[in-house]
Every structure is written in structure tokens, then in C-alpha cells.
Image (cartoon, rainbow, N blue to C red; front, side):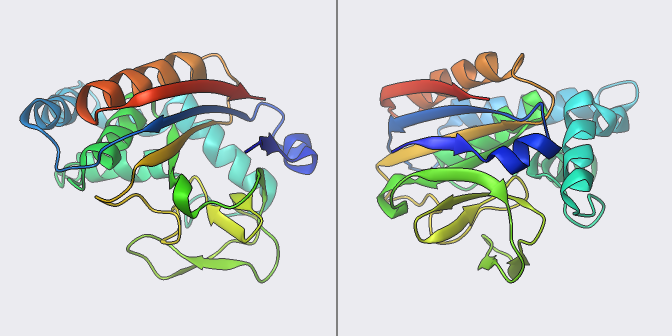
Length: 219
């Protein structure tokens, strides 16, 4: 499987960079130690002198700017990192889904970068990161059909299956997932992507019995 960034997207979002982690995993309920990390992360944000300042971090602002450049309203279609931060600020906390998904959400909030997560058993062929086209939709995880036009999306040979806003039900990770691809999405350059990918790989190894983890960067 190859993963590439479409040249047309790169023209409009020249600092786009992807940090990718593939691994064999187990996806049980999160162990107590991971739940403690999630709780500590939430409290650290709420204890900040100005908690809402996290919504103006450079990574969040770069994602909003990229959406505007592609023709999508970032007030209506937020990156998942911003959506998760808003949940924490509202006192709702991070979701508790399974160990793999919870790791993704933790690292996304820590890094302020949206992260796509895909069950590779349901991905077919190579993946391209491009702008969504008119008429393209998919059912987002726990959401209605998502209008993908102008949204940055990941596409395999069957069509779009993920975006920084919401991934699709087709490739979502469940308790039965055994092989995953996680993609860290930065529109502010690659400087933080490598560090975030290694953090993600480390947590998958510790909490999701990750094996054969591989990290690669795309710019």
C-alpha cells in the first residue's frame, strides 16, 4: 500500500504533512493506566490559566486555514483535534471507545493534530490524500452522511474513507481490528509530526499490544 498527497491539495495547502503509523494491534477496552493518562490530559487542559487558548494553537489555526483554502467552512466542519478539545473544555471529557481509538484521541489532544485511524482489513489499494469532490459523501462514525466536497479526504480504490473531521464507518476500528493505519495530519509542516508518530507508536505498543509498528512521513 502506498500513501501520497495529491498535488492539487499540496498547491493549496503547501505545508501539508502526514505522519503514518501502521501496526498489528489488539483493541480491547482501555486498561486503567491508559484511562489514567486520558484523565490526566483532560485535567491538565482544564487547569491551564486560559484553557480556551488551546483552540488558538498554531496547529488548530493551520487546520482552519487549510479548510478555508480548500473551500470548506472551518466553523461548520472542524478538525477532529479541535472537536476533541472543545469536548474537554465543555467538561464532557474524551470518549472511551477501545484502547486503540482512545490512544488516538489522547495523542490528538496532546499534539493538537487531527489523526485518522483505519482498519487495514477494510482499505483496498493505495491511499491518496486529496480534496473531496462534488457529490462525494460517506457515513461518518456516529454521524450523518458527511458532505465531502472541499474537505481534505483519504481515498482508496473504493473512494473516500477518512478525513481530519470524521472518518467513515467503512474503515473504522472495532474490537475485532487486528491491523491499523493511523495518520497524523498537519497543515503546519512536518516539524511536530515525527515526534507525534513516535509517541503514538509507543502508546500502541504499551496499551494495545502493538507489534511490527512502522513509521513513515509524507510531505
